[in-house]
Length: 400
Image (cartoon, rainbow, N blue to C red; front, side, top):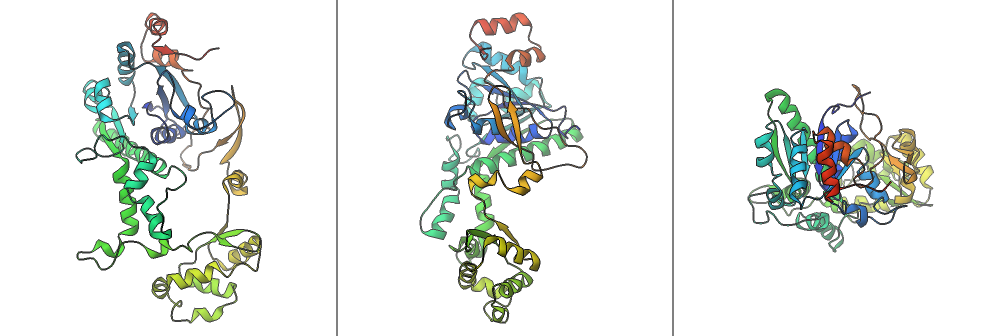
């Protein structure tokens, strides 16, 4: 079956994670995504470690499945001219290069949409325009630090830390895909495209403030910022006799069932824990009870007990064990795939499905420049023009 974005063509002038994740989501739902790379390739091809062959590591494979690769030298006038001709044939243009670089190349929203008013131009930036940080370079850790994400760890443990995966890149990449979907919907009604700015700092700062302003939302403040439940040092996987378990018991029914399960029924009438508001006031004590009460049974035993009494609980997975999770295997989130040049790999499936039709599984990620000549021909360049780009070293293609 076809996906909801079948027939939508996307030009992806982005690199590393935030932009490629965005366009990967679009490809996952049926869009044709053309990935523009420099002659040296997307930085992720080398930044993410080794693979079976150069430039084809596991991280690159996972972020760029289902795309076509056009490697072209945009420092050469012939390269930028070819890119602009290609941009005139697509529905969506996505980039995470800085606005001043976009303007120098002539691929900023004003330049491209002047020739193609139906184009949806999405610029993912570190910081939004109009503020003192506009135009600064940014990576995930820079954004985690300035947006308060690292500060959440300091409030919890006393030491600022980064989330040990690229949470800002992942989050903002998904938001960019969402904004593109909104723009495509509006184009259906108006016939006009859109210029979208998706700033990483503002989006992640909004997440932190929504979660943690709390009593500080009022003027004057009713208390300090920070949800002490979320920031509790005991808010973590809980030790069992043979490992860990992840639980949450928030409603009165869940908390009371938990107290019964651990053999402490008297806590159901304890004025500190009997109701939600009381447990919130005594989060430290409540979380300490949870953290110290599960050591007498195995994880499997607790999972069976909590399932029976309807207390939310799950197994704890390490990074290594996640790929073997039986639920992920059953729903097709992890499957074996034979890459045409890299051999056997694990492929990550689509986590979301539509009843009206889901795009087929995406093909493997491309080698650098693997689709260049075909992409340019489809954009209207003649074989003589393509051969000239090839001869002049503007068009980069992989060896046989």
